[in-house]
Length: 68
Image (tube, rainbow, N blue to C red):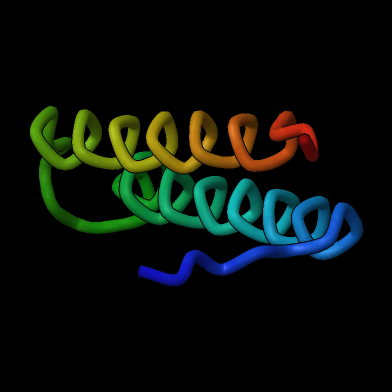
């Protein structure tokens, strides 16, 4: 099975964009609720936080991966 092998510059860019996507997800699902006319949903906020945390961890792992 072939694995996608990125050079350090590509890994840095992918990690940065993944972190940005996590921020957008958290912003939309948590802070966006304050702009809606619906009551605050804890489930939606926890889901947004979970997505943000997952993207953050993957971003850090992708950035920190060293080449053998």
